[in-house]
Image (cartoon, rainbow, N blue to C red; front, side, top):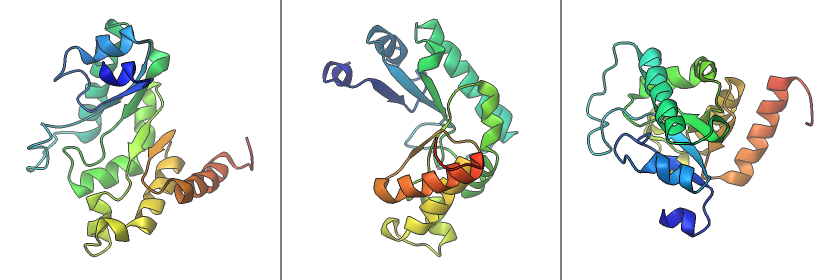
Length: 178
């Protein structure tokens, strides 16, 4: 509520209105947009051996349910973005599978956002590189995410990643310019 009063127009709901039942109605009342992110568990225990019976149906069903919660509270579908939650209750291997199969979330007919910037799975791939040493890994993950269907990427190094996205998107669309 305070964020919207201060001028925000979009809410980033990492719990998809499941932990804060007033989130969706607050976004709707303020005519805002919302990013609905998948998380397995809670932030305090989400990294403790996350296990999935079937990764993609579980995430997709969770996001589908979250979209229903949001629309039932009055948020129009066109103001909903989904985020499969890279790093939020996923192993490094889960993260790699999600990025490599992002197009599977297109079935939800909502823009897909990914937040891969400087994530720990990139550090693991790069011989335990610290966050400051993950720029090239982030660029690779961003480029592949765009190629696999990401509409929005959340990053730290905005200037460089804008250029990465421009090139990846041009390749994906097979044309220069919009």
